[in-house]
Length: 504
Ligand SMILES: C[S@@+](CC[C@H](N)C(=O)[O-])C[C@H]1O[C@@H](n2cnc3c(N)ncnc32)[C@H](O)[C@@H]1O
Image (cartoon, rainbow, N blue to C red):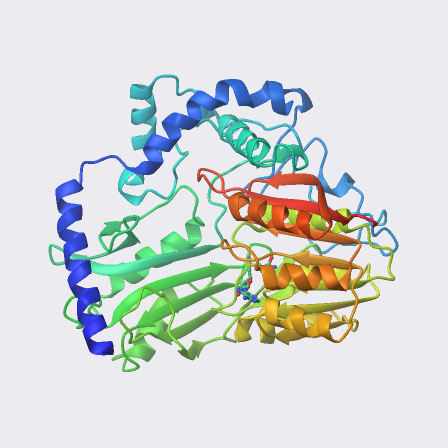
């Protein structure tokens, strides 16, 4: 049965490739969307959002200059000094991020000169030669200011009649912000290529540099591409099942400069492995850890279950809001750390913590929100499905000497049902589910536990709205939303919403 499924998958991929060859020149959904969005920008933009008035810079892919920086935004927590993104303690109890700006966005000059669709095309070619085939940067053609206006408008439209939407917070330099880069490896005309699958297919689009990915990560992937021939390492062929290297994943801690390289292979047997690692490290001494991940399954999942650390400690660390976090290859970590600090600061401010509360951090990943919030709470309970992430979270609590936090490896819905059935109560629930959103089971149990506030962090405004409507039926009213642009050049938007329990 399983074999049959595998062969059907292979057949489908072959068909994908054929279809792709036929459709190679067809423009993608993203391009169309960008056009649609442009129309909306005229109305949405500066006037409604007030973006042009605030005047200032933004948060960069990792840099942000701001008139009103996150450092000046007060965390309601207040009591203990919060810590800056560089790890410095701030005496005023606020979290520092010099580079972020709220309500006002500088534009990128290279993008902002684009005025007609033909010149937009030319610009697009200059900015990225594969953007049409890749489809990842649906908004690349659009000046950044307009991208923000479009996202603001989308949030306002979706949340109309639900709650107030604050001006979206953008970046000063919205490029090269991705701290995690994934490249699929393959062959084209006898040459090794690496890149991304064309959206919805298994057609490999070669990518050497990318406007939103970390440049060092792209450079390392290029080096690996160049090394394969001399080491006689073949890339994996999905159709035949032959070959070794399937993917390379690079994760970088922007604050620590630690770099993890994950080599995903189809087999545990890696000829000349030690020499390969030595040569790679010689070319890139900045790499701090190298992992071999073995994925021998016919699956669209990038990482397999088995791993071996080939060099270094097997994880990287990064610093967010003054706390240090270890990140394993399979654990979720936000891909835009500068904007993440702003997002978390907003979320924790919105929770209005006084130091006494029992807090739940649901869908907690490596424990980031819970650990940062724990400094301002009575106690925190984190729950997360991914066991590697929970292991990181437990270690992260120790690293930051946090004693009032506990993590559980469980489905968030099941965990909350258990808590509610035991009559447990909570004062504040942070929830940051995956794109699919939360579950009724989870929200029913939250309502039974009667927290005064729920802070919902979402990377998918559509499932967010669905869940807010369900929460309303359960007696929770959305009060305010903050959009934070974690994904410049793309159509994706991150947002945080504060809900309060209606007193009956
Ligand atoms: C958007 S991430 C947020 C993680 C974390 N809050 C952060 O900011 O880094 C969503 C997390 O939910 C986890 N997850 C997915 N489904 C889950 C479930 N049913 N129960 C608990 N955790 C789940 C994922 O593994 C992932 O770590």
